[in-house]
Amino acid sequence: MSLKKTVASTGAALATLATTSYAFAQDTAGEALKAASNANDVKQWAALAAGIAIGAAALGGTLAQGRATAAALDGIARNPGAAPRIQTPMILGLALIESLVLLGFVIAFFLQGMAKP
Image 1 (tube, one colour):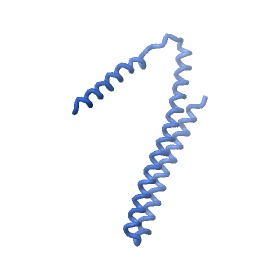
Image 2 (image 1 turned 90 degrees about the vertical axis):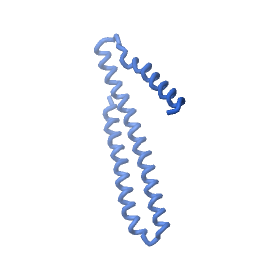
Image 3 (image 1 turned 120 degrees about the vertical axis):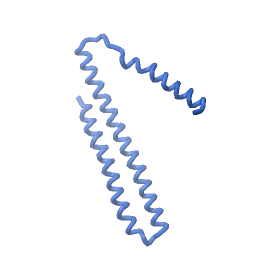
Image 4 (image 1 turned 30 degrees about the vertical axis):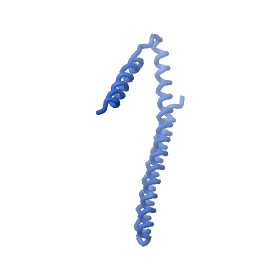
């Protein structure tokens, strides 16, 4: 491992250790205020998780469908006679990829439902 990588990873580890102590800081407010704060925190994180789930599902599905389509079209271009044998599995694969994207949307909607008051 080079010196530059060692310094970078050591710096990242020290920065992580220095900032995690804020997570363990105690609040002096009353228990009711803490409970309300925790409920709002859960709702905020659920909303953030829903946004990340939609983004990851859309990005991952788009990249996977693009690669699958490109590979199928490359195979058809090399052997046009095999187009029917390539096209059917490609469409099945695209449908399965899209089902994972829709599952991501469903999970995001469930998380968004958790975030509502």
